[in-house]
Length: 490
Image (cartoon, rainbow, N blue to C red; front, side, top):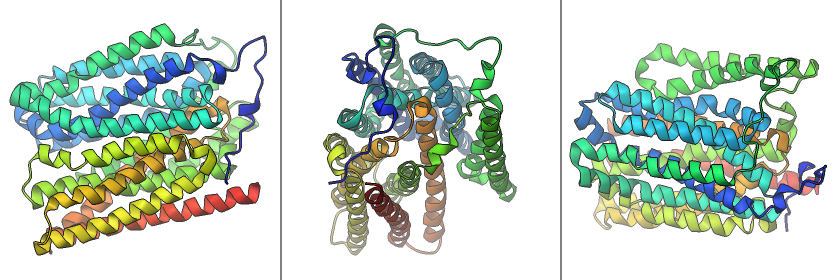
């Protein structure tokens, strides 16, 4: 059986009589705070998708306004991730985590009370910043407080929380909109974050170790340890790459930002190497990219999100536009898959130390089978032999795949990363997910609508599912390569 190789950090000793944090019983309470907060941020994302029609009516919002309700959050989230992760590595993850939760909670209040679409979008930008601050701290704290099999279980609980939030979010959003009506209902979908956020802040203040934040020295290399130039270069690079995909209606010129983004990445790499030559710690330790388990893992994750995230967008469009179902009915299609994803994440998280990358390979194969059966169901629905509700069965396989791929892959990808760079390395992985999601949704939905213009919804769905299958197959090839790489090491 393939085993996870412990990193050098996993074997480090803790001087001055300090205990290894991976044996501290308080770590499970810390994990509970992290999971409550992740639950809040993910519910917020899935609820907004359901609330868009109500927001349009309640605020007389334009199509562009609604686009930015989604895009504004995605942009600021992706831009601050890596810099926030590095800041947490240096200044203390617990304090920055709570600051992120506070920003997210306050901006949820602002969004819920928004008098106009412009106000709502400003609040969504702030929510993205808060989420970008707290997410890499959560990953870094799991790496810090958990080792070996316990880390796999922790990421399993993380995956279970993701699955449950995805299942509950759309249904909760539909119920709140039904309860509050057009004017109040969509506001409740933001305000529901407030009690969760306040609970997380209170528990974090009670349970997180002190000091929450370590102040940087006012002289010497204090500010330079944050690598501000590198942070700005990478933030601009991510913005330039993401922007055309999340705001693709801006015309042809907007796509010129892509080569600008690539140039900025190159300049960032040059700067980081220069920082090392100066004897300073860079924003990201570029040596981690020579660790094959890390580079393979972030590639698998980016490809997986590029493909499978689009499944739920396609299904929502298909069952509403193609089959006439309501938004609440379309949300029900994802519930069995989300619940199975939650269970599979917990199951796989407790076994990742034993089976390793084989779990990820198995999950990707299950995803391909689910996509193949989904294509068959769509064909049979078009022929009148099946109801569209049969898609819930094939999508359930994709839910199982999601739980078996994401949590184990996170554990395996970060297993050999030094703890000094736990936040920033985890943030790079999340940035790859965000870019993969943006690229996948933009390309696959564009293919869907282009096909609909000349053919039926059935043909369009076959094209969309087939493109997703190609991307998942590429992720499978990388996972097989990683398994071989690990066998060569051992």
